[in-house]
Image (cartoon, rainbow, N blue to C red):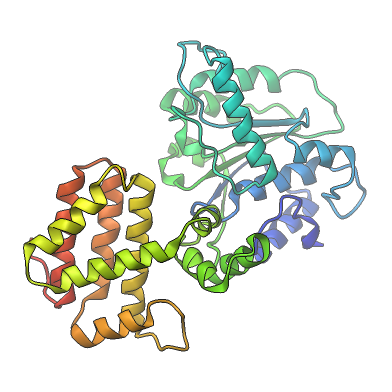
Length: 377
């Protein structure tokens, strides 16, 4: 049954799990697959479940979770599992991705992997790990062409495969063109379009759909004991990313709700000083960082979505008074234009544009959208 394919605690994704279960049982399983989807939807968990199922020793209901192969897979210790991810660039070695990494850094990397083992949705956070280099693929190629247990299936999982640089992608292509027998490649990515066409053409494409905010809310309440209101705030703010929702749930979102109210009050005024103060608060390095600014902007998007949806008090416990007040004060508010402006700013901040200029431009554009005035190009 499909429910057995859940060794790594996938949330939702019932149809996707049934599809993979059927594919595995059919025996018509290709050697290379790309699992794509937004961050936090369960791509890594799905890939690990597939790896466990392919190597499970049980006769039926794979993965069983009880055999030695399943236990090894759960701890990333199975000899047939090859896990690749971005590492810091510490040396010019073309064959050893770990060359030059100091003991202290290696300890931190192992601690990050331990968190991933504990919860497959966890995003590895390794300082300086910006790309997957050719050394990782060359080492992989050396390892997978060695003799192995004929009763197992080698599974190569490349996390965030879009991080492969050009040299690494070209090296992987050669392996995909002449793969060793009994080997399956699973590439997970949020950005399949960033992978070379040559890689995509040799892989089967599989999209992992978004999680609903209700599924994420229920998971927060069940797994973390989060209150219903806090869980809703965190789930909706995460935009389908379960890992981000868990992070948000650990924070005091009432602080951010107060900041949203203060920002909206500033935008409702006509003076420049109010907007300038809000900009300075968001750019203050002692108060904010890149992650917290993104969190604030995500909340702002949620607010304008609720304005656009014309919510009723019984629909949500979030900022009902503020939404209704905004609808009354600004009946011609262009919420969709406001959301697009915020999304552009979120993307611009990731690209490290000038922070104060970007925020100031956003706030003045939002002021026009509140009044239903199309910003001038």
